[in-house]
Image (tube, rainbow, N blue to C red; front, side, top):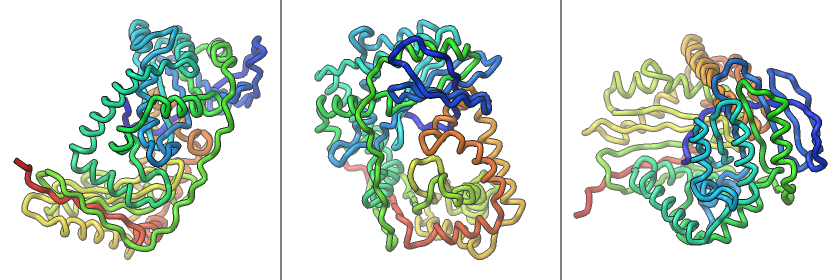
Length: 447
């Protein structure tokens, strides 16, 4: 069920509650049509009125991504996401999705390093189903020991397919694990296979009871909704759920990297592959905007530098590019990657990637290149919000990182980036001593 997701948005309105357990504080913020309030148990709610939207969206986000796990117990967050569809005493196994589908809606979920979220898309007059069902499984999840072991086997098979049997994903996993020394970003969301084998029902139950609590979650509702009635229903269903224990904030500082690291992965594959990852800040750092533009200049389509040089002109790479996402809770990575054409050397592809970076360090990109990258970033960000679902998601992702109002600074930050800014961040972050390089070494299939 886990999938990659794009950025996100939020909203909400104040209505007096009749229930003693649902006293609340309100940020009566009409800004951008977003209404926000916090129930007495710590649950935040955001509601966004989108007139004319054919569908409404209900999303509930938990601060329960894989960074909240511990050594030896990786994979808990993702496995729990699977178990959340196994039912409660009131709504048995597979009932949740069946009820949503019967109402003409769809539902799914996703787990990342930073968070887990669950969502439904429904007609506005059916949102009450999401509210009732999500409130129920926040507190009453069935976790049958046999069912837990069975679902654990499902996740282990998912891990085999996505990573163990996918050479490039395996390289990515190894690079990230080597790049981070102390930060929990170093382990994969799906978990290490050895850890998955030893996870018990009690491990999962303890994690569920500590993380799936109102004061560690927030709700985003968006669409052509009656905000007052939706909020009233949320207060009724969620307001009586007891507040959980104190949620300790992750307090881990990654030590500085003092030299290049290299990992080699030998795996059955047709072609080699290189992935070079540099330590880079997240969106809370002003440099993140210039890093996004740098990624666009290097890899923003067929006219960008890496494609044009390595694929069109030199003809040494089958595929190549750069990647960076600032939407992480903590500083993460900037990537360069490439696969050589048959008969070409992986060393040539790797060196060619570095040469493109060096050119920018020596000479800032042109105003035209920078503007094109900025236009592309802005267009992608704006167009993603044509969907009510992604308006809710963009809001939520920014809220999870540092507050939803950060989204309004995002485009402003991108627009301010200059060619000199792009050169400056390339010089500051894309340096040899701060990179971790992974090389896929193809081996012949054993008979």
